[in-house]
Length: 260
Image (cartoon, rainbow, N blue to C red; front, side, top):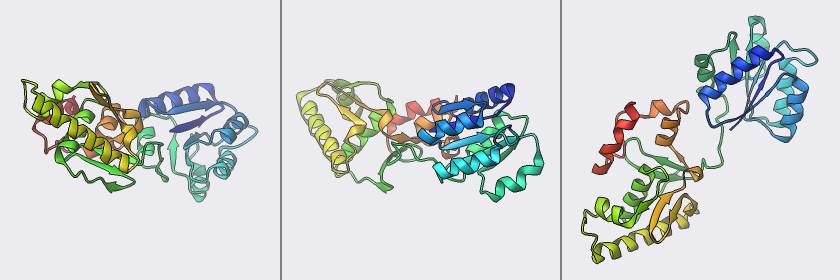
């Protein structure tokens, strides 16, 4: 997510950027005191969201907003100003939000949670839901697993958040085989192959690393409600109702992390 912050007053810009950073820790935030410099940057790097002061020399925030919309029609414009009389002009051009200074984390978060145009991320086509029952969605459709153990294997890897998991651990947790027998190892191999096959069929194989000895998911290649919650992403808190991968008993040990 790329966010633009523009205010000709240095102190006000610092406060704005600090508030945005608190709400969107993983966002790319570019700050400018000059509307012209901001526009030049946006021409090569179209923003998803732009927080703009309205009264600025050389170019008003309203004029800058029009030019940004010409670059990206879906850009979310949020005006931050000390002058309420511009609200009508702002919303007549379909602004996403309007913040009266002084800017605060609470006000910025409220606007980010209610954007006019939802921001699409590169990994948005693959979404993992962990709150409630575990499900994987690809292009908006629930992915069907022909073998339930393959689905549970993926769920366990998601729970580990990218940490490598050994074959012995998987046999112990998923197959209840502490002895790590040859029979369990052979069965695990079949499950791993089935998982890879199922993901590859929908062009989603990039979300896992199924090495011969260790396995993991690759968090950067998909979206996940639990990961967003732990990162403090707006809206993520509204999705948790006290249940996490409810169909898997081993997941009960992980639920406490969402109450901290």
